[in-house]
Amino acid sequence: MPSLSLPPYLDGKQVLVTRARHQSAAMIDRIHAYGGEAITVPLIAYRRAPLADASRSAWLRDVEQADWLIFTSSNSLDFFMRVLDRRERLSQVKLAAVGKKTAERLKNYGLEADFIPDHFNARGIVTAFSTKKISAARVAVPLGSLSDTGWFEALRNQNIEVTGCVLYQTVANETNRDQLEETIRSRRLSAITFASPSAVRFFTYLLPEALWRSALTQCTVAVIGPATADAVKAFGYRPEVVPNQFTAIDLIDALANYYHKKGSLDNEQQS
Image 1: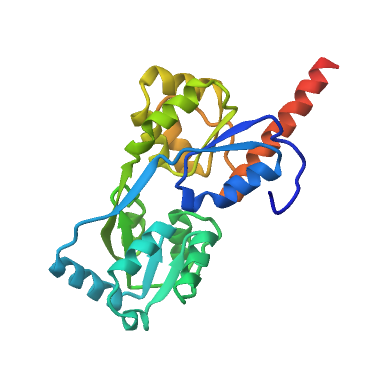
Image 2: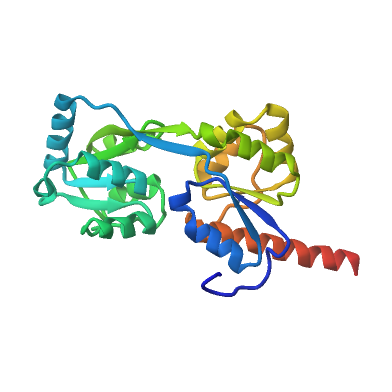
C-alpha cells in the first residue's frame, strides 16, 4: 500500500522501472501513489572492480591527502566503503554528495555530507568550486567503469588536482533479458523510466533493435536528468519527460504531471 495518496494521474498506466530493485522502492511507491502500476525490470548490475593491493593502497593515500572526497552516486559510496580500510583516513577530508539520496546513504555509514550541490549532478560540483562556495587543492572521486569524467577537466582548469579510481564495474543485467523482452512485447507499457545513461544503453543492448525502437516510439520516455536525456537522444529519440530536480521522486512527479496536462489538453481539444 502506498504511504500517501496523490491524484490518480497514472491511473491505468503501466510504468517500467529499469533501476536496480534496492534503489527503486521510492519510485515504485510514488507510481502506486498516483494510481499507476510499476513493472520493475532492473537493467544494470554492479560488481567490484579488480584492484591490486598496491593500487588500492595508493588510492587510499590519495583520499587521505585530498581536501574533498566526492561521491557522485550511492554506488560510488557503497563500493568505496568496501575498499576503505580505516575510517581515520577520512578524519581530515570533507565529503561532498551529489544528490540527497547519496547524502542519506552517507548517514547509514555514520558519516555526514559537508556539501550537497544545488544541482544534483557532477556539474553542480564544478559550479560550486568555480563560484568559491567550496575550495580545494586536491579532490578524490570514486568511480564506476562507465562514470562520466568529463567534468574533471573543468576542475583541473581551476588548478584543482583530481584523482579518480574505478572501484566498480557497471554491466548489463543479462539475467533480466527475457523478462524485459516479454514486458516490451506485451504492448501494455505506457511509460519507460531511465535513471542513468547506462540504463538507456543497456535497454538497447538487451533488446532486438526493432523492439527497442518501437518501445521508444510508442511509450512515453521519462529520464532523470540531462545526461540521461542525451543518452536517449544519441539513439535518435527525445524524452518527453525530464524533471527540474534530478531525483527519482521528481522523475515520477514529472511523469504524472505530464499525463495530467496531456489529459487536460485532450479534453480541451474534444470539447
